[in-house]
Length: 101
Image (cartoon, rainbow, N blue to C red):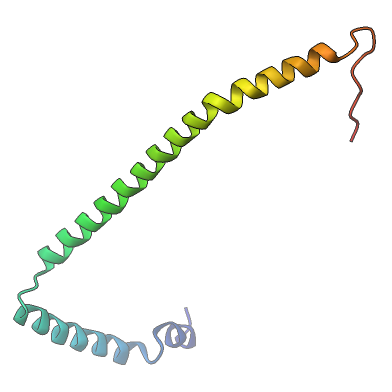
C-alpha cells in the first residue's frame, strides 16, 4: 500500500492519527472510569441488547408463521376447490391449451 493510500485511509498522516486516537482513548477511558462505567459493563449491555433484538426477531417470525397458518386454513382449501371446479369444467375430449412463451 502506498503512503498516499494510507494517508487517505487514515484521513491524515498515519502516525499522527494513531497518536490522536491513543490520546482520545485515554481521555474517554478516564471519563468513563469517573462515571463508573467499565468495559465489562459495556460488553454485558451490548450482549443483552443483541439477545433482545434476537428474541424480537424470532418472535416476529413466530407471529408471521402463525398468521400464515391461519390464512392457509382458508386460502388453500378455497384454492383447491376452485381448481377442482375448473378442472371438472374442462372438456375431457379436448386437450388443454398449450402455453408457449
